[in-house]
Image (cartoon, rainbow, N blue to C red; front, side, top):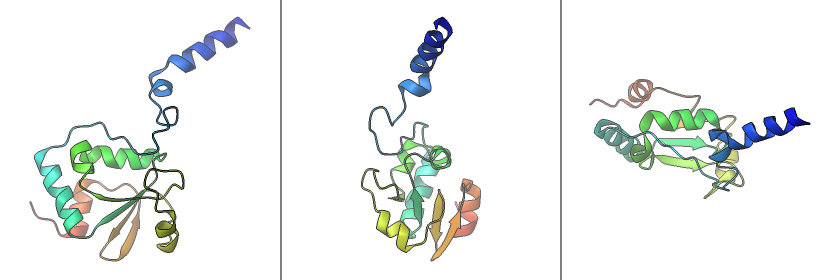
Length: 129
């Protein structure tokens, strides 16, 4: 019984448990890294070019993708939330686009599944800094 109580204490006081978006009902992706000026400029370019990121707030790969940009740049992206219970959910758009996994990127009408580096995104979109 004592071991069970210790285990429960550890789980409840671990940083991941305390800051979980699920516990606070934050049904959105929370990016915490800082953006560079270049990343913000690139994110604006992606938005202006019509690039869309399909995402789900609970997806760890989506969070990793967001951290590449940083929180300021991530706010500039066109992001479609696919989770039904996500903030500003657009589940039907994701169904219509046949999104099969997260993150997915729509670039020039083509859906690309997976985490992409900023360099890969710049090559796929023709971005030159």
